[in-house]
Image (cartoon, rainbow, N blue to C red):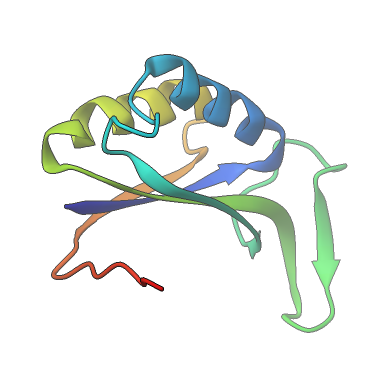
Length: 111
């Protein structure tokens, strides 16, 4: 099993989720599961001035973006990363990052 994490501009996250669902890879029986979207603050370059603001806590210019997390089977990784990459594109040279890590163990919580 693998975990995919992707840091995506907020205005692209809905398209990414839609593309994952339409792919058929993230249905109840397909193996892709535990899809989460978490709001995060990033030091990524803003697409325009409206997207960027200054964080007093960090003393840096930041943007709000989304962190997508999902668990999948090893054989799904390449296809899912490709779907995320295509749907998250912004036209910038660097519009975010996708990371893939191994899951050492997974235990369901029962009862």
